Image 1 (spheres, rainbow over the protein chains, first blue to last red):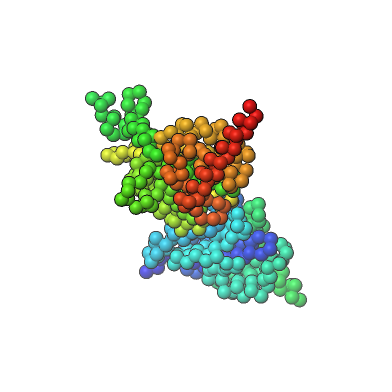
Image 2: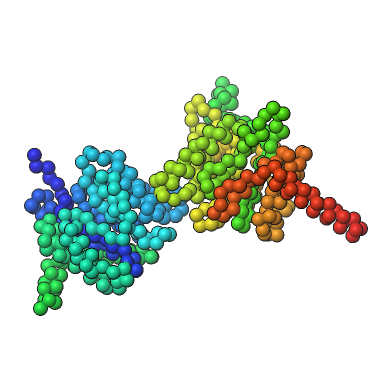
Length: 213
Length: 249
């Protein structure tokens, strides 16, 4: 039986570097071979210091990450200080863990800056929760890892980091049918995140081809 | 009818009192004195120990208990009630570490204990906990903290405080003697706590239990010998200051 599954196709990535964390995603939401949304925002802005990415089922990601945002807000009100990235990611992991085996589909990266510095956690519906310097999720993640691994250095400049993120998403959308649209990019700094911008992947790929000539 | 009903369970009296809570506070006033002092790099807890019967093992009932590596508490009131509260607090300290990956702040665990106490003032068929607690420790950022809770579920932060019988006398002593010089060093802070307790405890060092936490170090409970040497030092200082007074006359 055909269950309508939104957003299974995706490429998202995030990596830490000297000047913070760069978060980049594509914007295609697909149900089977139909592109249901061309420009879907796969980054949820939890608070000015916390971001969450979404891959898997759009409904599950939106619901659980919005619920996470509610809990983060309550934590800040009760304890008079912002929640740490490790606590926020643990809250999400524990919420998803309760539904293990029941068909949730969430692959998320929780990214922020707290007392301990820049933080990046990968959380998914199996109950996995990992801290690390670089992650990519979704059907296009293998293509993104290829570009990221070949271009990554911890001492990238800000512009180099943005370019690397854009390039990884663009080439992933090139090969993965279920990723495409625009590259949505955020930069997590010490005083919060900024939205770097939205760039169409076909423009990017054209520019890369021209640069090669 | 209604007026007799509110003495047995915690409901409001016509003039706005919660009699069960007030009776619980009376039970606290009957308990042995406890004093807490917040220094600069140290927090000190001192408790009046009731004299131990001849056949009783000395250290079975401790009135100063660790809640986690960096927080501990002393209480005044019903020992059995305290055991329940301490157990719940210890579980919460670990639960917090598990979900948030950070140790509790002293304020958080105090708020947890106070919320627990308040719940028992608003539940059917339960009576309030008959204890006041002094909770001390250091937060992650290194700041020393001292909080006090009471059976109603309120809590406040203090520089120094006392609970139990004779709490008033000890608090007056502290108000007079808690100064910058008095807490300038760890040794002076410890001495201040012992001096405060000696005001109201009969027969000196034998009936005092003393514990300290230093920043980034676990709870340290003083041995009887160490307490005796503190008391001896204090008595010597007292004698010397009296001699000086006599000379100046």
